[in-house]
Image (cartoon, rainbow, N blue to C red; front, side, top):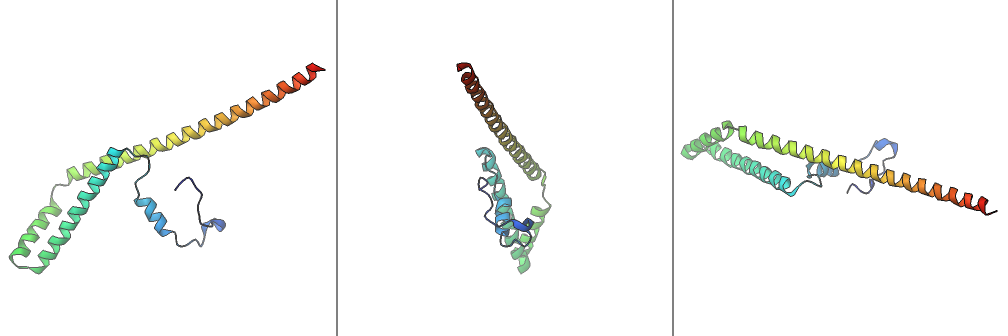
Amino acid sequence: FYESGPEEDLSNDGIGLTGVGWKLVDELLTLPRGMSPQLEAAFESFTEQNKAKEAKIKVLTAKAEKGGVKGMAAQNELIILEKGDMTETNRIELTLQAAMRKADKRRGSQALNEQKAKAEAELKAQHDAQRAKMAARRAMFEGK
């Protein structure tokens, strides 16, 4: 995905570029590549737990709107869910976000190191080629 250039015409500094919103959303909501499998699993698990809690809140809200005894029970359960202790959930979320930022930095520094190594190798190759060229010239003059 990142290895190739953009498919869209970015002339005019991208002004008037349309139809790429889905790509932006996809990139924002996709987990970065190179994360450890444990971190990915923890993040997925946390996301599933949050989705399950939200779904339960929707169901309870629908039951509470109907009224009656079941509605009152659903209303009480909703209050417990919404006002419950979120400390552990917040701690897990912050820990996962910090781990993702750390993984992102590590990936960035790794790419930077690879880029530096490649540049150094190219420079060394140019230097070696220049030395070989000079050695050939010297041999040519010494041979006369």
